Structures are given as structure tokens and as C-alpha cells.
Length: 246
Image (cartoon, one colour):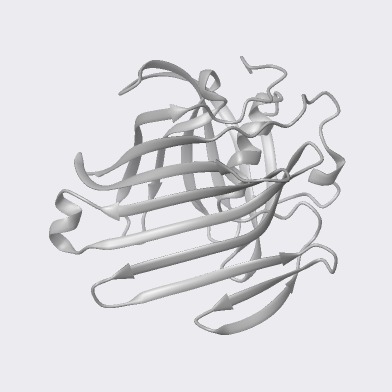
């Protein structure tokens, strides 16, 4: 679900002039996935600080409820990244999906000294040039949270996605009050599009939780509108916001 491009003149390496020092604290957020008002799966996001300003940002999803009656699917995405200046930089991204009939494994390894990413899919590897500031399909969420906290409302990121450098464009389109499992939350509503396929997603990001998305909506490959709703959180998302209220 969690898959806007960088205008190349804007690079993460340039940083945010007024940003506070970066800080990564571990947290775990759990979500329920719904389609047609019915639970079809569950997702857990986990941020784990390691050492030397590095961390692991992981998403684990599996079918549940009505979804599990159709088939059991398990998906794990894992981004090993680091604090770079006043932002984040991916080092290795891994995607694993398995169900009863098949499995798929993807790895993207970033070599910043040469400005390339090595993409490996089912033991086939190829190189792709990546500009400074390129993100993976998970780490862009952390940078989005950071940028919203810094007051940005129009964001563009280059994302290594599916063996290509894709454009993710995000824009804040207003504010909305949500009633969630955590209580009533004020949110900034953000729309995301991928220029290559015109697919769009909507995220509701809560300033009180470091602009963590607490609700997401997108259409899956079969055209179903799928919602992802927060159920619980332990710990607190990265909070380096100089303007927490947005």
C-alpha cells in the first residue's frame, strides 16, 4: 500500500534550514485493513533504532478476517536506513511476499559512493543510477512525516520502485478530524500520486503523532478501495518537528 518525484533541483542532501536535529525513537503501530467495510488484513509498522545513526523501518502485513478466507498472504517490507544530515537515506530495501502458491523476493541495495542501486529480483540483478535524495518505498513515509512537520505542503520524491526511478508527488489538501481507535485526532489530509500510472492514495497524518499516517486509502490491483486504519501505537514516531502543529 505504501508505495512522487523529486524535482532534481531539490535534494534531500540540501536539508531543511530551520529543521531541528534528527532523532529516531522506536515505535510500533498496528493497523487494520478493510474493504467494503469488512476486515481483510492487518499491518504492523515497526521502527527500530540500531547503532551509528542507523535504523530499521519495517512493515508486516497479512490477510485476516474475510481476506484469510480467500487466501493467506504474508508481505514483509524492510528498509535499513540511516540518518543523513537532517533527513534519512536508505541503505537496503527488501520485499518478501508469500502465499500458498508462490513467493516473491526483491532487494534494492543502495551504493551512494557510485550513485547506483542494485536491484535483485529472484536472483537476477541489475544496476540503476539514482540521484542523491532517492528513497525506497518505505523510507519515503518517514521523510514525508519530517517534511509535514517542517511545514511543507507540496512534496516530491524520487523513489526506487519496481526497478525504476519513479515519481511520487504529494500535496496537503486540507485538515480533517478523525475518530479513531486512539480517540479523536486532528489530521492533515495528503494525496499521493505516481506519475507513471496515475494511481492515487490518500493519507491522513496526525500532527500529535509526529505526522504519522493514521488512515490510508487506495485502490488495489483489482479496483477495490482498501482502507488502512490505526488500531494501536507503542512508543512515539520520530519527532524532530520545529512546527508540530503544521
